[in-house]
View 1 (cartoon, rainbow, N blue to C red):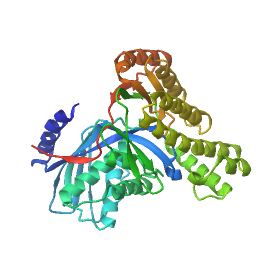
View 2 (cartoon, one colour; view 1 turned 135 degrees about the vertical axis):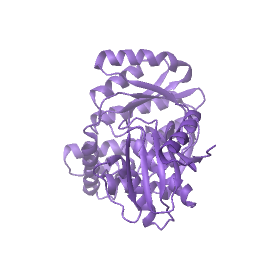
View 3 (cartoon, rainbow, N blue to C red; view 1 turned 180 degrees about the vertical axis):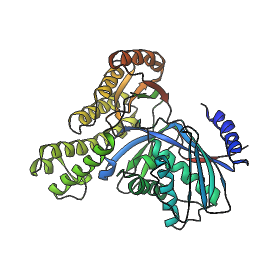
View 4 (cartoon, one colour; view 1 turned 90 degrees about the vertical axis):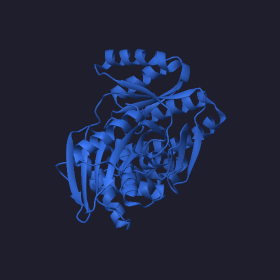
Length: 383
C-alpha cells in the first residue's frame, strides 16, 4: 500500500470508528540492519537503514486522560488512563504504546489523552523492528496531539525502556534510533556508546533487498536475553565494562566458558566489520561491503548461534544471484529476514528465482521486496 493510499484510507477509518476527524497521522519506519548484529547492547557500532515500510497512527487529542487505541490490522482495541498505566495481558500489542506513554509522563512531558487508529506495513516478528516503529509512531502522535517537542535520542531511550519494562525484552537502542533518525538514501552509522550518528550514503546503483523467510522466531525472545547475559559474563571475565572495550587479545587471555567466548568473539569482530563497511560504502566499494556482510553471516551462524536452516538457505540463494554483492541475516535471528545488497539492475530478475527456489527447498512462501533507505519518523498533514 502506498503512503498516499494510507493517507487516504487511515483518516477515513478514524472517522468511521471515532465519529470525528483525526488531527494528525504519525509515521515511523521499520529498519533493516546492514551490519552490526547484537552489538548495540554491548555499546558497539551498528549500521541500520530506515526502510520504506512503516507504521502509521491517525490520532486526535481528547479532553480527558484516556487513550483509546484501535489496531485495524489485528482487529483489536484497548484503552488505558494516563494516570494509571499498567501492562495489559489481554492486549500485549498495546504494551509498546503504554510503555512509551508511561515514559513520556515520567519525563514530565504534557501528554494528552488521545484516540488513535493504527496500521502497519511491517511484518511482525520478521526482524524489521515493527515494535520500534510502533513506539516511535506513538511518541510522534503524542507529541503532535500534546503540542510538545522531544529530542529524537530521548524518544529512542523511552522506546527502549518501554520494551524493557512493559514487554520484557532487553533491547539495545539501534532499532528506535534508526526509526527516529533515518535519512533517505543513507544508512545510519551509530555509536551506541554516545549515540552519535553519521549518515552514510548508499552508493548509486545499489539496492537493499529484504527477504522475509516466513519462518517463525519462537526462540528469539528467550535466546536474545540469554545472549545479552552471556555478553555481560564475557565482559566481566575480561575486566571491561562492555564488549565494546574488549579486544581479541584480552579474549584469548581470559578464562571463560567456550560458548561465552564464542559470543564475545562475534561481538568484537562484528564491531570491526561495521567500521570497515562504513569506509567501504564511502568509497563506493560494493564488493568489499558484500564480503563483510558474508563474513558477518558466518559469524552469526557459527559464533553467535542465531541463524537457522531457513535463514542459511535464503542467504545462500541470495548470494548465488547475479548482481548480489553480499547477504546476511538481519535482526535478532532464529527466523525473520535476510538482507542483501544488490546491484539495482539485477533485483527484478533475482526476486522470482530466489522465491521459487526457497519455497521448493523449505516449503515456505517467502516475501522479497526491495527498498530504498527512507526518512525517519515524522507527522504527515491530514487533508
